[in-house]
Length: 294
Image (cartoon, rainbow, N blue to C red; front, side, top):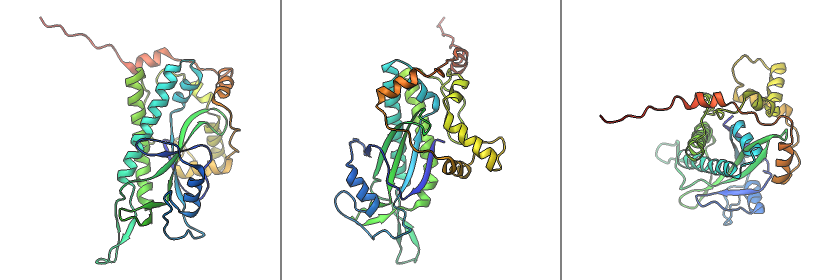
């Protein structure tokens, strides 16, 4: 899935990175107050949360499994840095899109009696980058928490319209995937396999399909559970089916390990990284003929 979306009342885990054009670290206690109590960093706050209040919205931007594998298993710092930079650029463009198209609270219109959508001056969010799946395999992804309390242009603290955010979340995921492909093609000459219409995601051309499957233990677990408990056909799992499978099979997150230690474990794993040169050449296509003036 390119982008997951769910209403969140949970505290996130990991090291928070506040999303803004310049980036920067966010204080964990400040983030917790924002999500738990609706108090933003400058101390402003709106109505107190009730027992059924939505404290925030949880988005997930996932790199394709093949990209995570190349970053983790290739002993090439240039490639690893290029992938990290592409992931950051793709996340930035996706969040820029959400800030423009999904940052809307509903405001009462005195003339019509209806609730109008009014665009916020910006959208604040906190990003948490993760390196592993819940099965401990390489899985570069970023969880983005969008607090439900946001500042309107007049300084009032208001709640986001969740329906608008929901409808734009998938588009933001497609933008993330397209930007990632563009950045890695331009910087490293990577080619891509077919884009999945449902997610906008494509795997790297040239990474063996069986290798991707072998390193996708969490995905296999979800499909196996769905096959035994849900009515599924040959199509990919729907968002509702995927959410049900994730909830039913969610293991505890793997213990946090240093990046260098993770690399040691992955690179000594027998599953390895197998490349398919023919698939890469097919994706790249025939060389263009040179034209000469006569």
